Length: 423
Image (cartoon, rainbow, N blue to C red; front, side, top):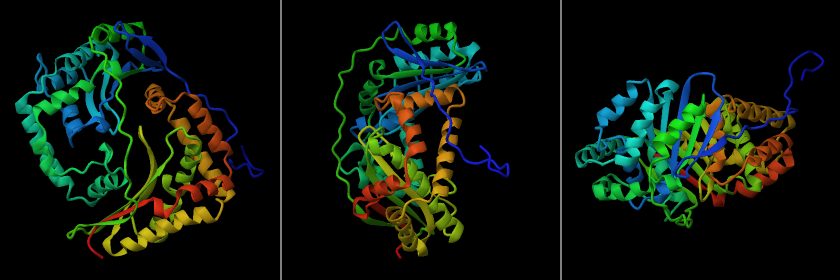
């Protein structure tokens, strides 16, 4: 849309439809959700397991189990696992999060069978060798010792403790906890890497051959049906202001955190837009205040993080130690403004256009479409989630945003945390 001078104007007058994947069942009954949308001969396979932090009984149990998957099977050493995938130009990685662990494979179509053989071997024959585990623990202990010298790392871990007291998300951990992990703990946690609880996604240039290969290598994997156990849901937030001293720190890390409704709840969609206004993009109010106007930080941002038992609103930045309290006061001030005054129409139109444009960009390609599927599937949501998201971004009013700010930007129901030198 253009104005009288021929200058493009923001518009939200267009429709967006998110393409859903197709579904097939492997011979063992496990579903595969696949997107055939690629023009290049490359594939991404992802296997999501119910094996996140929420399931661990000890600190670092999920981390170390996940990493040990690449450390050897009955047929391959850790070096051979890497070499067998690298030889064909592929990339095999493992990762973990609060609620799940994931094996990800990127590979050219013509070598898909070679890489699937390695994935199959990991799922069937991982042995978690004692020597490699000891080396892994030593390496992770050393990395942890470096990380805990960073104020940003300390702040993130402390925020989790304050937000999720008494829950696996927020269990305190220290360097001594590495010595408490045994091979038996790893083997016990590995039971969560069970296809009965897994979600498999496939994206790229997917034809009959690729689907047949997935069934050939993954469809024959036997598994014991894992009983569905309830997720631990009880946690005890420690709201209020908290300070963690770090005497040699030049910078202070600042974290704010507050709980909001689960992803897909009625208020959730409007909070996504409210978050963007406050700190969710480069033109946000927090960036304008603390970076552009005052020059206190290189960057400040806010985001909404969704997990199985809770969603949360997080603000993060780093500033010089001597202005820590001033920065905290300004963050609260910007949040308070949103409770006192409706967002102006020009600013609201800019944020609408930014969010819709970013959403469209995130639909550009098979991998992105697969990401959109997992982004709702893990929470038991359907594709009407995206319809509601788009409708809210297009239609929510400034008055409605102000009501949301008044409902959730409550100082007494937030964690305000700083890590750095004593002021």
